[in-house]
Picture 1 (cartoon, rainbow, N blue to C red):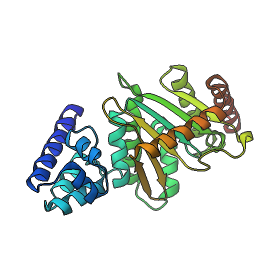
Picture 2: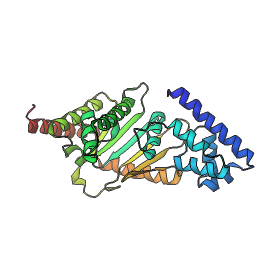
Picture 3: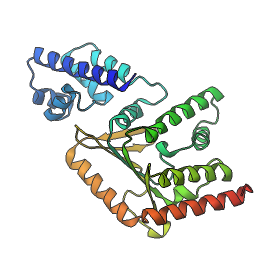
Picture 4: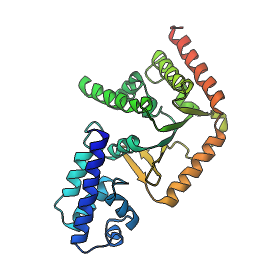
Length: 277
């Protein structure tokens, strides 16, 4: 679905939400209380500024007695079965964000991954699946990375823990290509990358990945991921805390120029080990 038609569809979602809420005689605050979000967020859903998560759409159906209308519409708008439900909403946020900031403690973030790296990660988690399944996941990831080649693209800032740079995912040659890809994006000024060196020791968000999104006409939000689950954080106070923690990671990380040198040096080491220099 093109971005224009997608936005129009979300505007329809919002208009229907407002109409059906008013038919039930509920204010935005009253509906928000019943579905466990603020009245302000209900207003943003109705204006198509913010998209609800699936569980919120399901609770709206229950409260407004709409027989699954909002869940079905949500699933149609976020209809890419290549992603788990909890991550499909994140892909939607990527498409509309003006700025994306990520911290990766162990794995290269999806938007920076090469096809070979994605294949290795997918296969490691799914050793018994078909080749078709692997190719589908790789294709979906590669499609997402095109965001960084778009015009205009969101401002993209990634902090990679040094473990992410040193672990040879897919083998030495594949890892060299992955790091060279990141370095090339940085040299082209498509992304800004910093490395958090292992010598820092303890650091904020130990072992936890986090993504921060900023938008032109909507409040910022954050995303964290656990085992087969993810969590979008909308509460302004909580997002502000995550932003503050991300600032601490920036302060502890190497400057961009030194980070680029480390990434390039690691890529050379992997090339040497692979015997492809």
